[in-house]
Image (cartoon, rainbow, N blue to C red; front, side, top):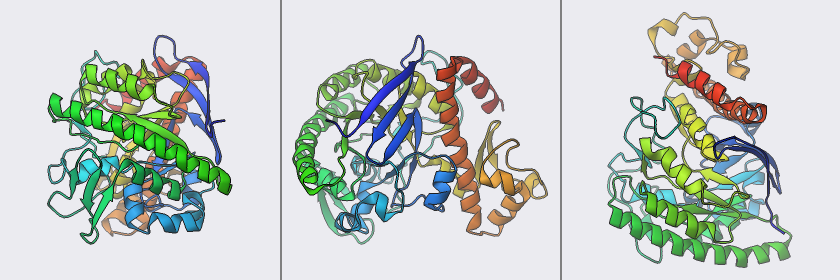
Length: 419
């Protein structure tokens, strides 16, 4: 019996989208859902109680960072990620594969998983998309110089903390993630640059497939040990790669989809305007009865296109990252709270917003906190941005159940990108 149960309640007519329910050892997730990122076993500037209060259902932590500090063995001694961070609800960890990319090909080049700036005016792949701002999706801030070297067996990298050398293989990544103990973990993969050649994308994809097989084999072995030890079962997701190339994406979806994974991740490395083409190619092939997670995507407009093309879960650091810089999501687009006009504005960030920040504080107060460089500024802004994003996906889910997804999408995007 699988540790994860996924059921589909309603499908989006004429598209791949669906509203479903994920059941795991530490609770349920109504999908589609936004996964809040807690990189180092903490959501930056927020307590677990605040994260729960704003509507979050699940938190994702970073394998690479937790391995370096405090160490995966310490988390195992603590009883696992959820117990360690006082989050007795569903948790996820990535594989460390994105850090391979961040420390290697992308290092010092300001390249993200997704290239070329744009904003989503409409989520259909055939429609024109332009303007906007690229969202970087990693949490790393290391010194200059590439810190990772990839070979067919794994990755050798240097710690951004002290420069010490470490080695990740598929087996080691899975071992670390078993120690961390999240409900959902990911196979080790190689995330490539969107600017990489077709030849390298193919090479990296084939390496990802080989690593997926090794990850799955190690997961099954360690799962048997967990079962004998009475520990909660974990679910393993395989990751589809292939860049922006249709033939590679489809080949990867067929290959990974045929393996005995509990669900699937869709890796980045595509041009922004190609994103929904790529997601659609993949999800039209992956087994319909298993959940799909789009890694590192969370800009409000992007969520509609992802859901429409069959994505069940999203994660991204953007809501908290831009919050710490004084940028806030609203139905009318982004707001820079440091703009002079907000210094004496005593309205909430957004009228009719149910978040703790908007219910209790004004734009003028947030503007003051940011100008005074007070830590509370990051807390209040992060609460609002996460509430906005988490509940936007909940509203998208409800629109599928209500049968008015396209009307809701058009209304939201028209207002959000009106400027």
